[in-house]
Every structure is written in C-alpha cells, then in structure tokens.
Image (tube, rainbow, N blue to C red; front, side, top):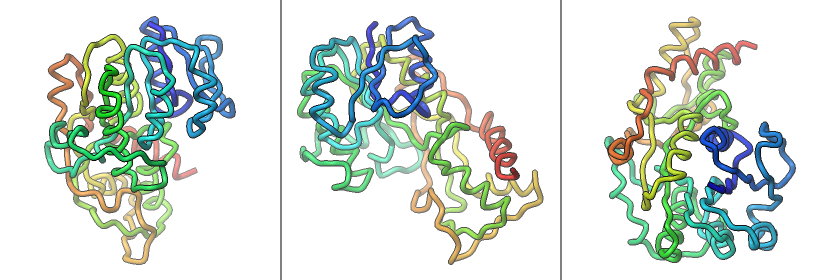
Length: 288
C-alpha cells in the first residue's frame, strides 16, 4: 500500500513508520524538512508546514495515497487543511482519550463526535481536550463520506518521550526538588510509544472505520512509581504545596477499555510488565 504519514519523524510516529515499512508498505512522510529522521532512502519525503494550508495543498494535491495517517491534527482546521486536498482511500487520525470525561473502564461510546456541534477552529482557540473533540467532529461529521478512523490514546510514554512528563517525577525525586502533586494515588492508563506505533500500523490494511481506544492493560499511580524510586534509590520524593507543578496534575483516576481493539485481534502489553524497566532507565538518566 502507498501510505502518507504526517508526523512521522519523532516519538511514536517513528515507530509507526518502521512498522509500516516492515509490513512492506511504501511510505511517504510529510515533514517541514527541519528535523532529521532515521529512515534514509526507505521513505519518500514531502515538505510542508502542517499549519499552512497552502503548503499542504502544494505538497499533496497531485498525489494519491491508499492511507493517510495524521499524527498532527490538533484542531478542526487541521483536518480540513488535509482532507480538502488529499486523495486517499482512508484517513487515520491520531486522537486522544482526553476527549472523554475519563473514569475506570472508559469506553468508546462515551464520546460520539457526531453529537457535537461542528466548530472550525485553530489550535490555540480551545483547551487541548476540547480542540480534539472539534477535530473528531470535523472528521466524522463534515467528511463523513471519507472512510476514516480515530485512534484514542491515553498518555504515551517511553524512552523517546520528548515531553518527559513521567521523567519529570523521577528526576524531581532523585534530585530532591520539591513538587506539588494533586492526584498522588490516582491510577491512570498509559501506552508505550512503540506499542502505539504498532497499534496504528495494525489498521493500515483493515476496513475498520469509527473510533477506537488503544492502551496497555492495567493502571498505575504516581505514588506507586515514586515508591518504587524510593525502594531503588533511597530517595524520598519531596512533596510540597509550593513545589513545582507536576505534568499529570488535574487527571482523575481512570482506565481505558480496549475490548473493541482486542475483538479485532490486537493484543496489548501489560503495563506492569514494562513500566518499572522504563522507570529504571529514567532513574539512571536522572543520576547523570
């Protein structure tokens, strides 16, 4: 298959491209041309600015793809700026579980983008979760004739996580920097970056349309992670009301139901099988 990946030069986008190449697909990546990538001559490259409608039109208008993966659509206008010009058989949107009012066992049907009012907007006009709702609404309501799907991930983490959100906690504990955590015991869901890429690639040649959750099995709290850091290093995290605000503050306890994906044949890893190995690597990094 001939596949375009928008946002394939870092984090789970790299894993997505590698999975697609391993499956024998022909891959084109859309990039601003400013960042290097590890693919060499295995991919074709298009130069565009994801926020500039005219550069998108110039880059893709005369191209045809079987599938377009869009990892960089953060608002409804982002979807419009691609689908007004893209000639493709399917469009796959990287979305987020932030579209939900999350709780334990959050299921796909709890947010139906068709029920939303269509709002054309830019990235900075709404909070992230609301903007992604508008993104999905634009896709499924305005471009309803396009076979498409939205893949909803919780927090994506890994050694290559450029946001360093989970690392933030480990580093602060190791370096004894005070931090303020408002949800210490709340259990949350995660997915590892390579698994996120694998899950997205799984649907390249599938007929599934609609929206679907992707998450590693299980949940973990920040308290469990910090307790592990203390056990491994003897460092007790300093918690203080005037400490640094932590990245996952404001999140409530939740888990993500992935039965729909499992019924389609995808098997997720178990969070507890790999999370502590990742924390070990973060510990060593924080010690440097």
